[in-house]
Length: 210
Ligand code: 3PG
Image (cartoon, rainbow, N blue to C red; front, side, top):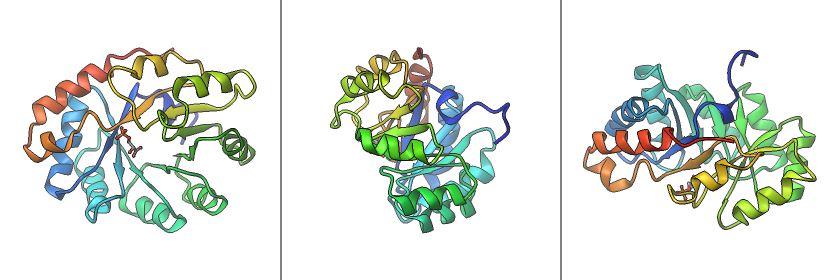
């Protein structure tokens, strides 16, 4: 990425985490998120159609930044890149997964939930990471405790973030954005309720970061 591009953490206050079960939903979901003011989407590699969904969004919705989430292996990192993913997100950070994501040349957010994992990611030269599962791993208390000793690490907390707690995370100095699946609930996607997804995105896009 060029120096003029904002980092992954500084594009939108909320990164929509999306699970696509039906490939036909991928493009309309992406368009609804863009219409609501969130031109970033993390497609989780949790369904058989996920890579095809990444490919479809990359081809048909060029105004969105599409990434792959739930990247568990170096092989998946490369498959996601080959499908057109523009960034990668993993729930954890093993040495081989970190190396595999770095090898794609794409920006990526490795998952961390302990101080030692954060330090291990920093040692690889990466300062931006996911904090997952955020609520279960200590939430805003963990992150504000970390901001003193390790201020150079910046986070996208994900896992248990809701409209009720997102602002508390976004107020922290070491949080750039949060991630969450609440914008694209399974029932709204299945029902093709694109207007309601657009409104959820619009509410989230108005959240203010520190
Ligand atoms: C993720 O994939 O990062 C999480 O499953 C999203 O967590 P949430 O469903 O609690 O928002």
